[in-house]
Amino acid sequence: MLELELPAFEFGGERYVPVPEAIAATLTVTRAMTGTVFTLELTARLHGPCYRCLGDAVLDLPIRAREYQASSPDDDELRTPYLAENRLDLSSWARDAIALALPDKILCRPDCAGLCPVCGANLNDHPHEHDEATADPRWAALEALRDDV
Image (cartoon, rainbow, N blue to C red):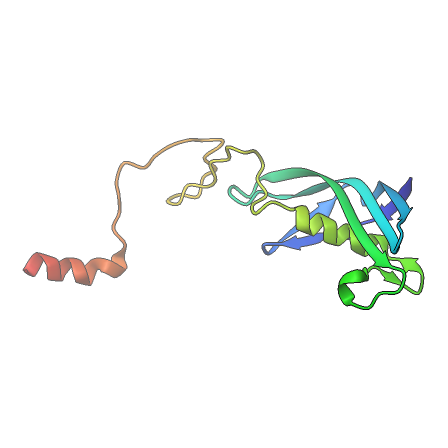
């Protein structure tokens, strides 16, 4: 078991913080015929705002990432970017693996209703509808033309 320090993430213009910052991870190094296979396993918990309602969202991400380093790489595809001078940069690798595992939208719950587009109230706490549909004042000139025709 290893302990990795994870930085905060910027995703969709919002900040997501790993809690705790230091997480336990397992690194497995396997020798292959033509190189080395590295496997990193961890579970990260991120805290930040919900994409829809801006409430608190907690996201648990189980990560299992693999990298390959050829013994004598001829091509960049056979070389891992996380290995330099026989040192494996686990924090950068974990950060990138978490970033790739993030969903399109981080939500506080799968059925989050978001914010009311009229009054801005949280629809999860106070579900409601507004009776009157107000027209956008920018369309008033076109409405006047339609009434004249």
